Length: 171
Image (cartoon, rainbow, N blue to C red):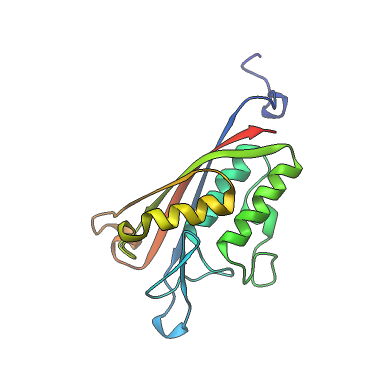
């Protein structure tokens, strides 16, 4: 292949890597929103969004779609309160995404998600969260977490972010 070859000209039989990112602010505590993260409900104030606001699931969806060349979460589910993603949980959206990949000849092989924020504390439920995400995607998903040492919106406790990487294989 020459360096000038267009991405669409790349062989589809090769493994592909995708990356995704998502960030949301925490909802007002009086909203009554449940905190959904990494396909689990957690104690604490929920996350704003048209869906459940699960930044871990949303970042992973973008990683899966970008790795397969099938767009992003907005191109699959739409955007806004009337979108196909409105009111949905991250686990359900991940299953729909994986089905979409299969329909186009791809399957996830493994993935990694890094959460960025001060809360909730991931460590006590890391294995449970990784298992829930793995079940939704059908491949191993590892989960890590970090803070930004007080910097930015995540450091001030205003919201949470996630970065994901996924290995996609042709099937």
